[in-house]
Length: 21
Image (cartoon, rainbow, N blue to C red; front, side, top):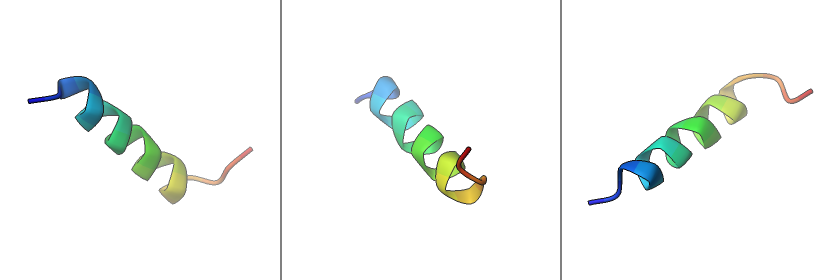
């Protein structure tokens, strides 16, 4: 229904998993 929303959620999760610079 929202590929962009899924991508944004994945990016947010990656940012949480990775160290914020």
